[in-house]
Length: 290
Image (cartoon, rainbow, N blue to C red; front, top):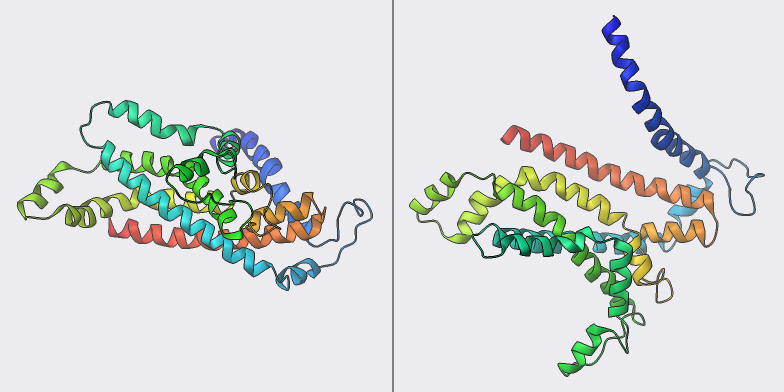
């Protein structure tokens, strides 16, 4: 009995912090989403139930921004995986200066996103940006990155690909070093090609490592406000490069519609909850397989 009380005593500080930092803001956000709180109704706001959710679901731009969010998330994760796994497999070989290459390739992930995003924004400048200057030297017309809806959306995607692939690279490199060499030797004896060894040995052995990294990458990318907001200055051109999370930020801190923004954040939470539940189900499947 005393040991049980002692356990609860040790858990009390951590539980108090979690309650104050996570649980209370989470519940309060649900409460705000059911009110008409805004800049003009900070103290005299009224409870209006699910009115914000009804307005949200009938918002004509909601599904447009949701579609762009899915494209944003899928494109980033695809290239994070392809580039991260490819670079990790190269670094897993015996190369001269491998530690130097590894340190240089981790730099994009180690640098603050704020600095990296602003640097890339300068590189996308129409007249003086390094990307357009390189294109001109190759006799390719310069791209109006922030005047065209498609290019204004591609610009932050390129930025986030550069920022995100080192995470997958580090995770994959750790997984590659834990794969027994005997499996590759057995595949060589069976006459397996490089691609066959990758799909039948390397990739299955990496799945337990990549699965949690993939779900974390999905959540981080889905909620990535900094890159799009800083690169496109909050939605250039004409609010066409928004994803859900940047639209929520603008609703809260440009239009000051706190209740509506809170309802929008609950909508995003439900989407991410579904993704996590799918991940947990896949994790249990992997545990049974291994």
